[in-house]
Amino acid sequence: MTFANRNLDRYACVIKAWRLAGWASHAWGNLTGEQLAEVWNLCPSMAAFCALLPGYAICKGWIVEGPVGYGVLGPDWALPREPGGPPALVVEIGAYGQIRAQLWPGETVLRYEHGERFAQATVADGMVVGMDGYLAEPRDWARIGRLLIVAEQPTDVEAEGIREALRNMVAEEQGAQQEFDKYFALTGPEILAGPEVIGGAI
Image (cartoon, rainbow, N blue to C red):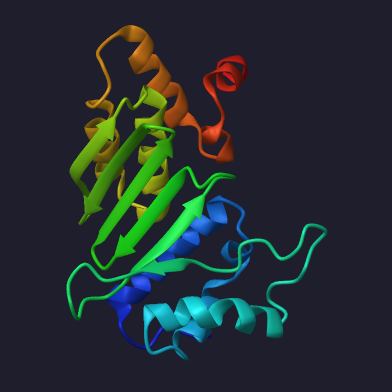
């Protein structure tokens, strides 16, 4: 069995990104934890991991070409926030990249964007430590809350804290609260569907 053997705080970002990729049915999200660790152990940095993973996984036969090509083969990375710091791993989800997750050691920033509208939350140590939004709909807050739970795999208490923090960003009108609750209850990619689809499904 292969285990990650260094930089475990940074490798934790890889695992969170991988969970999101699995949820979104990205090709690299179907790799096993052992396969991820094998690539990680070869790489000197997060950026190198992002560069090596696709070709290595294809050469090993872990990822194979399907009827529509290979699919999403790995995460991206963003520059460090401060000199000498680690880069963020970046996972984009949705046909138009509506969801963007940036993962640093100890911190996850998840943003949903649709046109001018956006909702964003930051989680550190299992708690929501920052929220921002513009014209955000109740379903937008629910979407990022659900995906934060996918990435972080928090305890039940932490998950409830994430849910409550984001639900508090929603207006108190009954319809708004109901929309948040309906979307938050979804666990699969249908959470990105519009309310006309979800309303008929629940």
